[in-house]
Every structure is written in C-alpha cells, then in structure tokens.
Image 1 (spheres, rainbow, N blue to C red):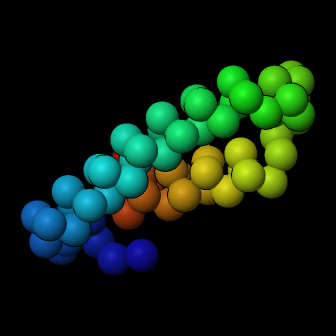
Image 2: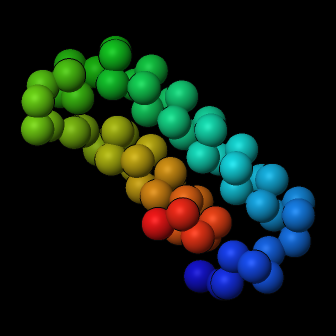
Length: 63
C-alpha cells in the first residue's frame, strides 16, 4: 500500500466513502444475517465487507 500522505485528495475522499459505506453495509448485514448474529461467527459476506473496510482504513493510515 502506498504512503497515505502521497494520496491525492480525490483518492482520500474515495477511501473515506468506502469506509463509511462499508461501516453501514456491515451493520445492516449483521442485523439481517443469521450466522453473523451468532456471537463469534461471521459469514463470508460479513468477512468480505469487514476486509474491505480494513483495507481502506489501512490505506488511509488509520490501522
């Protein structure tokens, strides 16, 4: 991943959009998905949404 300081403003804005959208998507998914409502269990879709969020946060230098 590149240095967050080297990102163009539009790249940072796009990454923040991904973080915000994936936060909402994961919250909605967890409310509707039976396996994800089970403590300690995450389905593949929930895991993919969380991974997308982590990747965007990492690119922004937040993780």
